[in-house]
View (cartoon, rainbow, N blue to C red):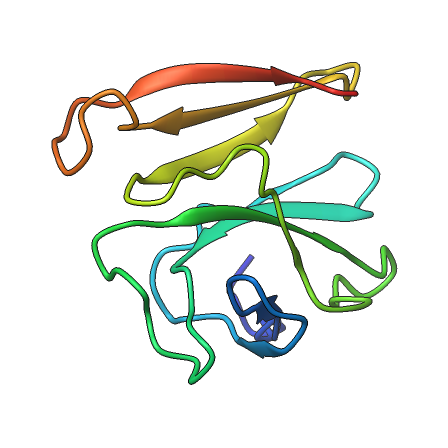
Length: 124
């Protein structure tokens, strides 16, 4: 593909601990879209009530429902709060083939380092 039909996907992410949202930051989102095109998992900076990064050195994981026909966000993203740890970087989310587990990388055992380990979170 030449990229001539590319379009920007605008996503709203929640402010940490609030119901208000902000536009997703412009950093690398490491997006992963489910094969049916209905969900996109990605990472973004955690944001405060002023839409400013709480910690520009860390990222959290989010999921957003998509309109499969267009790839546009159907609603604001949802933070995966049970997976995100304050002060750590969670990144590169993807689902298992059966959609029952989410795999991701994190530096939670050594925050701020480049020592990332792989994690698996089972669906509840």
